[in-house]
Amino acid sequence: MKRPMSRMLDYLHTMLRGETPHPPVAMLIGFRLVSIESGQATVEFEAGERHTNPMGMLHGGVLCDVADAAMGMAYASTLDEGETFTTLELKINFLRPVQNARLPAAVKTTATARRSTLALRKPRMTSFTACVV
Image (cartoon, rainbow, N blue to C red; front, side, top):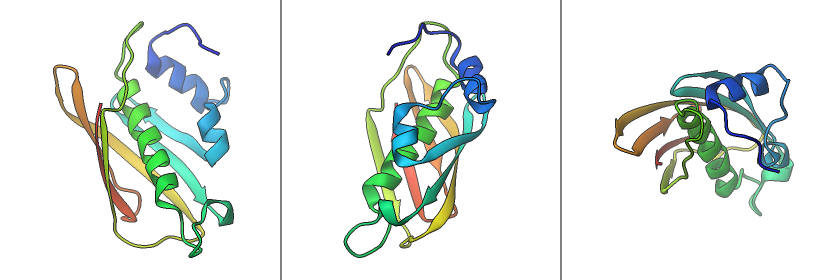
């Protein structure tokens, strides 16, 4: 269900306060927004057995989803009414395996030029991600 576009930072604050539900993908995967300000977001994710690959480690695609969501919220927080975006490219380097862990994903948007932004994320050094939106 589409909602009317308002200033996204205001909308994300209502999510943070629990007045608006997190998006369906957040409920499906199990991450939640824990802080938001213009150009910055922190998402927390509890990696558990339901997120594992056949080797018992966190599936890389799940970590990509969390990274994309955190970077998307950071970028969305800079948008005005009626503006929208989409991820053009996502690059992730996995630095160590993860099993059961609470993973914060802190993001700050950088290098805004025209309509592309590079967002970087470092969740406790389990991975390093860059994204162009």
